[in-house]
Length: 230
Image (cartoon, rainbow, N blue to C red):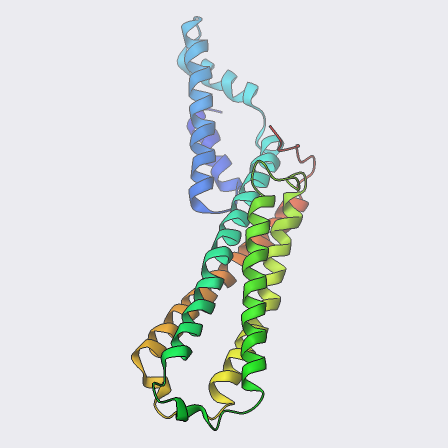
């Protein structure tokens, strides 16, 4: 098998974030090309040098498991970073919004007694999710102590997001539509923008969580996972 065919098959065998996946495939190609160049300098023709380089590199099933593990870690890092940034950001955004609107303080006189406790619980839940994202990001870093089994951390991120978003969504709907909010709040431009940003963040989180769960299943199904520690 020539280098181009090998690299193409390797790319088809891997699943994960496009950027890290592309980097791994390019890295494999560069390594194979360097080996083939060295073999060619030793007197082999180019075609035979590439075939020998491919044989020395290893069969596709032998190396896919290790590469797939790296892609699982990359997906977990992306989701952890997203949670660390987006969850506190949306919580702060809504906190500031409700602090300044409506401007008339008497407009909240009909607010039910449960509004403040539910709002506080929502803030705590979001803060906890953001902290979990940060801890997971550290765990998946090269200096993390839990890097030995990264697929468990990545899987945990996916589970937390899928468990958290329905609760957060339900509490948000309760605050927005279960309370006697001031008229016109849904059409207030900052509210519209906040809803758009929140929905976009939720969509990205669900996409990342689904990808993490799918990749962890693929990683667990791959035998002989190597130790990723340098």
